[in-house]
Image 1 (tube, one colour):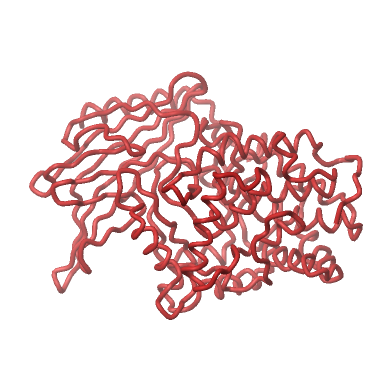
Image 2: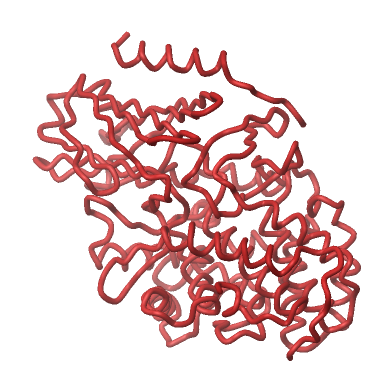
Length: 512
């Protein structure tokens, strides 16, 4: 065993032994708050999400375009300059139609201490090729990665080069967030300081994050230069996909109704999932990828690439439109998210009778006091909760329903913002108190009630069973990802509607 491996094992053993791991299972009329969160609390959550999280995840890619990364990460890229080979986690990079290079992240572990959490994983740099008959996969190098996150004190990452196949790799460098830290030579070990603020991931989710994020963030902060670049990116994608000057198009846009910036609002349909739609020249995702590649954003020291959703891989595997299958699954499960999208659309077109019926028959009965229940699920989904709050706020503000359930939901949502450390469960049963300062201000993706709300997976059985049958985009990062930008942006939209209808406060006032 290598020296670094012995050191790692010793550290993990000590931390695990000393850890305290706990198993637990129109202008609205201004109203006085009753049981819901106060305006001060709403402002606090919005400002933390915006200033401490979202702003750090924006990446200016040119003088004209910007994206918002999908989550905080630790971007590690290896580039062999002699052969122009890029190992970028999350991408299976084709050199020819039959050869490709990719990174496999494996054996993730977490060591929990009172004042430090260590996230530990391996990165295998792989080459896959076909000889005309069989497929072969070779590991050309292996990195051990240890990410140290402290309650107080400096955070850092240790990268140890465990293995290199020198007859194949000639001259490779390791890059962390675009900075060269050293050569890929066996036995080399590098320690790099990392900030507690978010480091943007390489991947961005164009649908929902960039497209829905542009109007959401512009409602909060105005069309500043920052969000103008995001708008430009969204408009370019819309033109590429739909071949027309279509306004920003997203299924969540109806959450922004009544505000200055909404994008196009349409009834829920499969074209909202345009990356997973088969157009005449292929899937929408392929067109988005080509745009990123042509702009020169992918093959760099710090790549930016479009996330390939599981709906896209589903479309690839079946030859069908991914959005059609996904919406059918949601309807089959009687999923409250499906009905919330329809309820929000009905409020937008002024059919409050249908919207109220959806709330009373499809959403409120699924609320159990902690979250919205989906058949066969483990954990609760934050985006489902947030979307429901937006719908409920509009209906309650207009007097069609009472505030009671909406207030209960909002009281849960404001507790789902990551404070820098929190509870995490890999299985939904045993929870660990982990330190993750780079996610501060983001909203946790999915949750379960423990001592306080903890991060755990949301798994509706039918959806998971179907989508997991197809190969997803490989992971970019080996630590835990309690929050992400899509969830945080949807939560912001919900809090904007709640503040508007409950307190008569415009979105632009929430940041002051």
